[in-house]
Image (cartoon, rainbow, N blue to C red):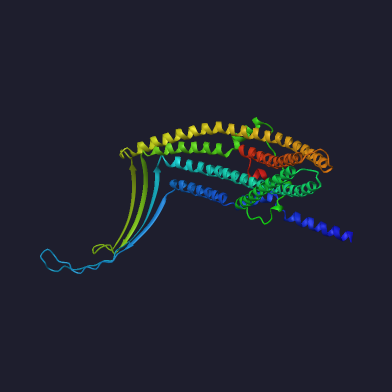
Length: 431
């Protein structure tokens, strides 16, 4: 019989493990299904098509055309008023035209800009990927934290509820006064208010989880132990060096500045000449009453130089120069901001790590103190109801602080990864 029970319990344990929503599984789900991220992936496809459009400026264009008309002359007279012979025709024309741009000083800049656009779209996709992954991590840990707080507050409420009943019995025996019972009831009312708040926070966290990651039937399936620590930079200098190579915000600023330089070059090309060469071959049937067929080849070279266009081209060039200067200033600002953000993320990680150790020690001490005070109170010592309430309150606050500190420590690690540009699907190995 015992062996049979062991088998059943083992089976239930395995099933619960299989159904658990692990950290990696949840983040992977958000990575694949998040609509914001999927929309950003389409922007990359758009940039690839824009590159093909820019390449097309170097290729010839081929145009096929044809026409067919029918003439029906009702009346035709000579100068003397006599009727003239009507010779209606039904002309048809077929032609092919090949055009090649020989000189265009702006198409090279547009092609280079489109190539930069591919890298820019990739950087923006990486930025969005980091944002969604961090939101997913925050949603996952947020729901776990809200669930733990709910359990702590529920346990505290049940404890104080039992204490109120115990104090009422002790009041009847004359061991405590009415004010002691009132203190217990007041603490119970406060615990109930905190429990209601915890229930609301839990519901909000669950809705946020489902919005960011996906549907979740049972929050108990979330596995806190599956949140593993990640490889982080060894020091601040190392983190800054990594961010200079990988941070998508810095990469975006650099690429946008490079694109602005190409825009300036393209605007300058509007003041330069361009040249095209075209070849047209046409064939006409039933051309007119005199000629039946006509075949014609035309080779044409066209040179254009926009000498004056109302000042529009010069204004456009000056506009592009100003935008180039703006992007350069933004790049300088982003370079400085990047170092500040990484330093802040590193400091936040270090402080949360130290704080977590302190809070754990605080909880351990509060548990020992509370256990001793409650035991002394129940044994009939001089311990007062107020001391028990204060001890319970200190323990509750310490437990809540521990839950928050554990989450803040986890988020600080991933925020540091985000600041250096490594909070990606490749680095987290979730693809």
